[in-house]
Image (cartoon, helix red, strand yellow):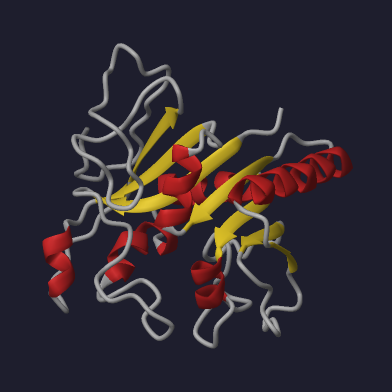
Length: 228
């Protein structure tokens, strides 16, 4: 069965980028700290990344994120979807209008102009077709940005929310050096069963604190300092 999985890295106090993200600063100032785990040699981090990339039958992203990954400082043949895994599932972009040109022409892009719900439905069809072709169960992954995932949660489109908790806080984004960044901790919540976090995640609007009695499955992986 194809699941809709929202998957994003977040600081322990709920930020999904550093300040002032833009075309020349995709992750925001010092926002790379949120994704250090994706490029680490830690075996648990590598497994989480490898398995997540392999399960992706189709990927949904917003237009702003597309402009960043397709821009001149975006993905290449060494770092792409899944970081060093450089996965190449089908990609579905939610946008008001398709771009005039695409730099990453070796990837399968579909541009949906009729809203997020239609984009997720399109991605589900692509993932199910990929599952049929490969003989493996594949999922739809919503990779961001934060506003897109927040809208999907609000609309009830998400089956599972997967947060990669980077052991940094937003106050550290003002520094230019001296980060102490260890392995990430993954929290997986089946949506509709539990919410996550001691307060809402910025831009994600995840309601309320985690109730351990209601959570069907919450896993902590790696040695990060994040706690719920």
